[in-house]
Image (cartoon, rainbow, N blue to C red; front, top):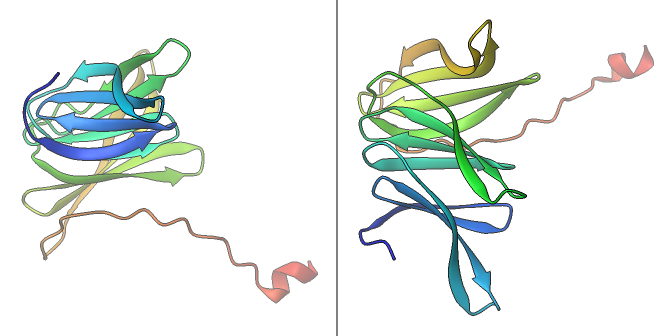
Length: 159
């Protein structure tokens, strides 16, 4: 049993994902009565944000930027795929999909918006790569991902 405050709660493939300090823990309900731990991984310093998509877990840290994790259900393991090497104090993070590329947006404590791609870098494998940075003039505390549907105009339907 872990001691400390739960800073973030989310879910992946029916499992409850908790951030407790620097640790990510995954639980499931056994017999719909008891919460049983399934897996854990130690992270950086203190987890401030989390986003999930399919079997991916994106975490933001108070001092060590972002990390991308993957839950492997068959092996029952939680593994680190990649992390940003910058020292950023992340307030919020979320996924973006850019065609076939997995993108990540993160907001730091100075209201800077960071955009990363998880992509194959020649001779290095898949890495989180910073592709842009901007500043938001107002305070941001959360990011909401919204799926946009493509609108087809009547002119496009005729062709």
